[in-house]
Amino acid sequence: MLRKVCAGVALGLLAMSLAACNNSDTGGDSGSAADEKITLGFSQVGAESGWRTANTTSIKDSAAKAGIDLKFDDAQGKQENQITAIRNFIQQKVDVIAFSPKVETGFETVLKEAKDAGIPVILTDRAVDTPDKTLYKTFLGSDFVKEGKASGDWLVNEMKGATADVNIVELQGTTGSAPANDRKKGFADAIAANPKLKIIASQTGNFERAGGKAVMEQFLKANPKIDVLFAHNDDMGLGALEAITAAGKVPGKDIKIITIDAVKDGMQALADGKFNFIAECSPLLGPQLMELVKKVKKGESVPARIETQETTFTQEQAKAALPTRQY
Ligand code: AHR
Image (cartoon, rainbow, N blue to C red; front, side):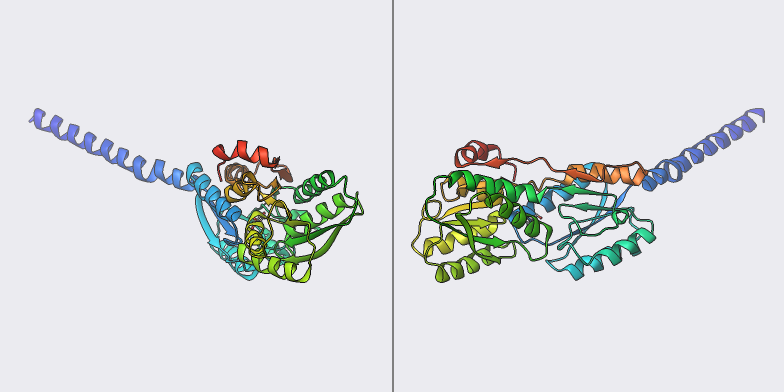
């Protein structure tokens, strides 16, 4: 009898301890792990360029590595889609919102909505033009004015012996975007050092190859003497190459070409002597962004501005860098 009672008590204790174990497995540990998982809503501009594709890959890969639950939205080049995506993220109560604003203006209302909902926002790649700096926690990205200035400085040096006017055409990025505005300014400021350097035509190619090609065709038709092309990104420069070659001119020689980004196709054109100079703009923002997301979620303070470190490339430097280029 005593044996039966002991066996019964032992079984009961075993069952209780198993139940306790089960509870801590399902309710305890995984519950708190689920609570800790950060949800990031990211609104991407679109897929207009090689740079943008590399940027999207960097963000997706880094989120997966960091264990961050990424809700990714491609706005397909439309600001209204970005605003809708941000509103959806607010409704879904994500922990942090990050986005690369297509243009500098028109985001204040939705940024206020995110702030009122208590969701921190990180600007990445491009900034918005607002006096209210409390609408976002930080801005991670390049200094586009510097990129334009580096491009202009190279040209000033290259053309220092010029005795006649140097006719420059400019392919601008998306109208109203920070990189288009800032690169234009940086370049114009730099070339002001030599009054012989003259921008004779300037138009948007929307950061796209097709746009670069179409606008360059118009430039070539309207202007018999073009000495230099300054394209706000590699893709437009690559599109323009086709137009220049089709017009019977030799890119890199008859028309010197300066671009920005340094994606692989651009670097190849530079190494091949078809481009003459590239100012780098790095799309590899993912790892830094994920670190910032974690800090902001914990309520830690972050610097208001984090500038991406970049360089420039001549033809010789492109040849050396190409074999190990990541994007
Ligand atoms: O905002 C970065 C710019 O956007 C890149 O230079 C360009 O290629 C892209 O589309």
